Length: 379
Image 1 (cartoon, helix red, strand yellow):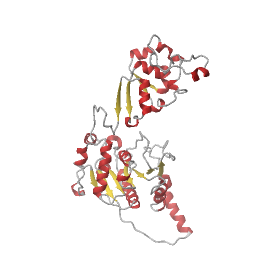
Image 2 (cartoon, helix red, strand yellow):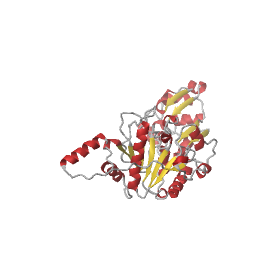
Image 3 (cartoon, one colour):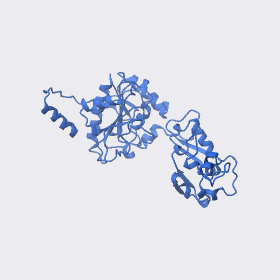
Image 4 (tube, one colour):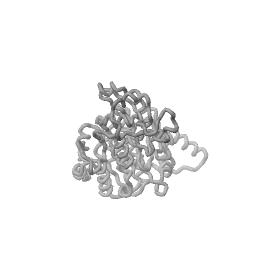
């Protein structure tokens, strides 16, 4: 078996294809373009000429007038020695991760250019028309210690209460994680609203900093416009990030098993982003059950005052994510903490914030400086 990055396709030799199983790793974006001119995988490469000796060329992409005008060595209408044409001839087995994102008309056009012999898709949200060969249930993933269950759901009257409880739950988990054998820094995910909704990303951040005294260094914003998580390794003990605010969803492939708490700032029936964010808090750190039972659960604080409504909203989201209806239906009944055996999918959150002692002090420069110093220290 030989493995190549998409940037290395020029290194492929005919003998490699004849003697070995060749795996080429790429993003679909490398192929998913409307205009193929100037794109590397669709461009003419003399290094690939030997692959095209004596092969049928019907259906392959040819040199365009634009490409011929830009390169005197190319002839308009001639078959391009391109990597895409090589794939078209070889008819590879195409394996697609996050396949639910590859359903557009342009994605289908890419498949036609490559002409795969078969397509194997991996997705947590299969479409109804898919030919599902194998599926893994939530119960099986839990048995393999890959996900956190149950999901402890706590309803709240408004988003501020939900955010406050999220902060308290995350802090409780951090204290428990300090006694774990592995490094775990619990992270909370906040699903804020777009600019025309409430609360916005900035409102959530301001509330965290001013009302909950969370240091700004602990907070990152991950939206289409603000990509503060790019290049940040949340598994690094020196990284202080504990709170992540987003709007729609974190990018595909974002992997942070230490994400434990989801805060949904709207009722679940009004947003579609929750299902993707919920999946981010289900992964188990190190794919191994933790000694403290609290670290084996996921947590959701929802701006929905009724537990049944909150649980039913999450039920629909989980079914959309690929959970079986039976798994969810049998696991929706609330259970008391004393009877909890971690066998349910949803449980009311047993973690209630500790009472907060409120002290009124005079607003003086000295007091402000002291509070700022404490905030810098993260206290």
